[in-house]
Length: 352
Ligand code: ADP
Image (cartoon, rainbow, N blue to C red; front, side, top):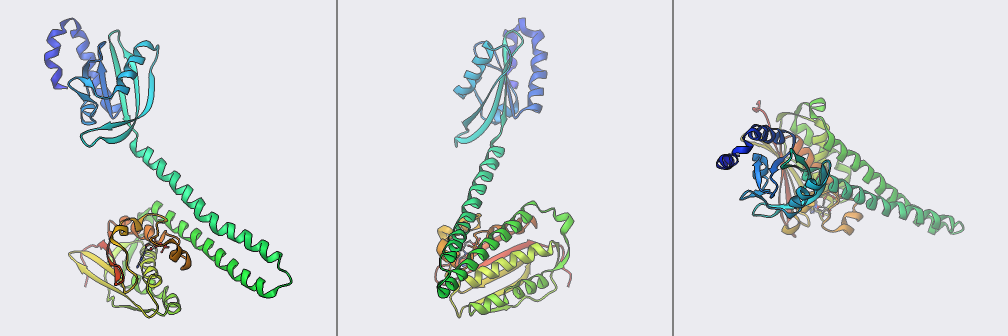
């Protein structure tokens, strides 16, 4: 705002207007991300700090032609005019989505208010993608179930075929049940109010429980599953959420290993951070995929994941569970050698 001080002497006739401008500049900053007052030549006579920071103004001019156009429109209109547009700002030319409004301000000026709507736009896009993904994921087993039931009713005099189709039917409905179950878990971790569901817990018990829930799966895959966790390691958190997270990691470690492999779970505390490490000697994850696997529905090998009953949601649940507890997940993996997922959770001073 300071750069306008010298301009003021030239505009002595407008002095009575200055106070008005100052108030306007203060007000726009409260009600919008950025506010600018323009004169008849579209020169900026007032810019709120937000407008400068947001990269709308340079040398007393609006940078974006679309905003200049809006100011022009406002001069001709009887009321306010508005537009939702995409702008590029700053040196990095970041794309931002804004809602801009302009209106005549007194006889000689135009007031322009710009609101940053990038976050809500991104949220909207994410929500749309998610709904599309869920629909796609559900469509496959539902389609298969419908085809299989048709096939069964057309094969009434062939018990062997019926038996085969019935088994496929069961597999597909189990898959459907898995997706729905994981969606429920995901929405639970995303919307969780931890203050209501948290309590004192021992991470060694969480691990024991998660390992226990995977015993049958480990046997089915001929995997040796062992935990070296020694407690107590106390922390304040959501027992069910953390157990689900560790359970998902152990489950992956089992299903992405070859029969005869080993899966180990460890627990240690380093500088008030509890580290739960789940290590396997399985297929490993290429480095280029290591970031993406935490995204919802992302799989390195969709057909393998489908075979093992995977939904692509397990690690998204783990990531959210970690974030909810102010923690993180780290991954070390080598293709053909195996992977270690480490759930790192800050804990209060450890009691021994
Ligand atoms: P899914 O239900 O497909 O297992 P996840 O979100 O749990 O979904 O995992 C996403 C993808 O990450 C998996 O499809 C798999 O490709 C990869 N992945 C996860 N854990 C492991 C692991 N321990 N070893 C190898 N690949 C893994």
